[in-house]
Each structure stands twice: as structure tokens, then as C-alpha cells.
Image 1 (cartoon, rainbow, N blue to C red):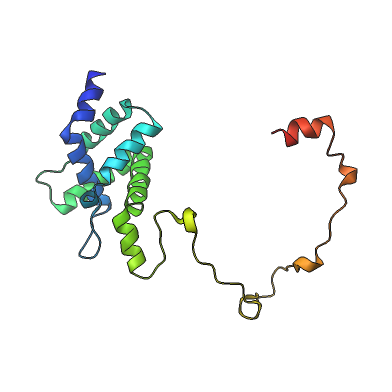
Image 2: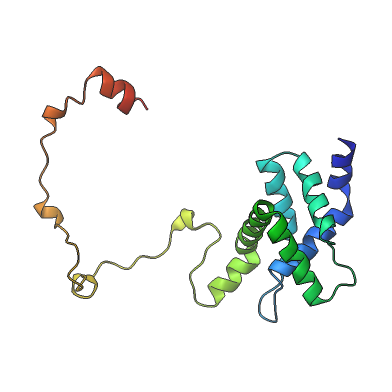
Length: 177
């Protein structure tokens, strides 16, 4: 447990993960890097929430194995180090990559940047949703000849009385589940 506490409190873990994140999301003149946004912090929170505090020790050891925070390494050596983790620990690498991307695109600064570029993007789309234009039968009806659709006015109820949906088996194994 002492090792785990040291990993949690270690500025080296935060620095190593920030350097790792910058290799995944380096940023450029238009987009901030992942570490600039501090996405390593929500990544650590997710790691602990999905596992426990002991997962921090495993992460710290993995990052140390590849030489993070990459002090003195050039761009090619840093990329090689990250590729080493991708090869040697594919599950951990995949989790870190997905967590980094999620934290990046959930960041309010990135949401605002995407939205400002003309692509509707909201931090919490479930609150108001996205604008959906009214369906236009003249322009949105498929013309490819595949499939079909039925007008709502042509839909008729189906007689389900013969299915015995009120039996004990259906109630127990269907409706109550």
C-alpha cells in the first residue's frame, strides 16, 4: 500500500502521464495538446474509478518502463517508447488511448473550439439535443430502390391475443426482467 500511496502522490506519475499524453495528442498551432489541457488528471480519475488505487502503481511502473517523462529524448525516441508500450501492453495502451481521446474531446475548451469551427458540438448534448431539420419528403426520400417504408397512416395493429402474453412463464421470464 505504501508503494501505491507514493505513486498517487508522486509528481513523477503526473509528469510521466502528461508526457505520454502529449505523444498521443501533441497539439499544434490550432489545437492545444492534451497535457496543456491537463487531460492526464481526468484519466487518472477514470483509472481509479474503474479499478482502484492500486491501478496507479501499475500505470506508474508501465510509464517508467518506457522512460516517461522522456527527459532528453528526441521526438523519434519518444514515439518509439510509446510504440513499445503499445506492443508490450496492448490492453493498457488501448485503455490509455481511449481515455485520453475521451478526456480531450470532453474538455470544454475543445468542445468550444469544435463548435466555433461550425460543427455543432456540445459538452452536454442530452440537455437540449442537436437541431434536427424537419423531414422533407421531397428531398429526403431514398431514391436508391433498396428497402421500403410504410406510412404511419397505413400501419395497422397486430392481433397478439394468441401469444398468451399473460402466462406465468412470460410474466416471470419476460415482463419482470
